Amino acid sequence: MKLVVIQGPNLNMLGIREQQIYGPMKLEQIHAQMKEFANQNGMEIEFFQSNLEGEIVDKVQECYGDADGIIINAAAYTHTSIAIRDAISAVNLPTIEVHISNIHRREEFRKENMIAPVCTSSVVGFGPFGYHLAMVGMLQIMNEIKAAHEMQKQQQVAQSAE
Ligand code: DQA
Image (tube, rainbow, N blue to C red):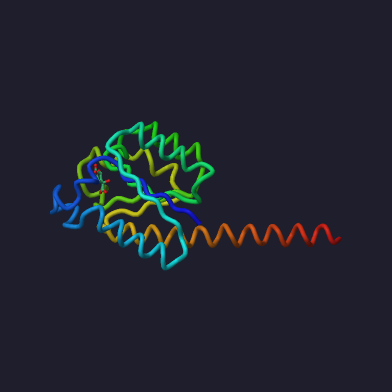
């Protein structure tokens, strides 16, 4: 199983930017922990960060046929980007959006969310630990998909034996 982690604008500044909101952890530290969890659970993982909307759209599109799931923090683009939303919709992969802060408790403009309606689920307000929760959630989703495929296969075998 391959997981792609997509990080939006200014997340490369974690550990420096607004520590009272986002905490002291750097993006590389978050990714190192995610990599460790991926290794422990036999997952392949790729990380991508960009400050550019179009590059994020390109990366989501690249996941089609290449990845089994996406974890995305679209950062400020969450609140504005129909293009990223459409890309997530287009590739139609299990997608979990993460927000380090609780966007519902912040400024009004952060309550607008273009991304959430096309994602499988959202994890908000747990700090960097939210990325870990998203990975646990993704494992669960993958297990459910696998179980559904196996059931389908068994039904086909049973039908062909009738
Ligand atoms: C964020 C929340 C966004 O509103 C903000 O623009 C970010 C980070 C978060 O992880 O809490 O850059 O996505």
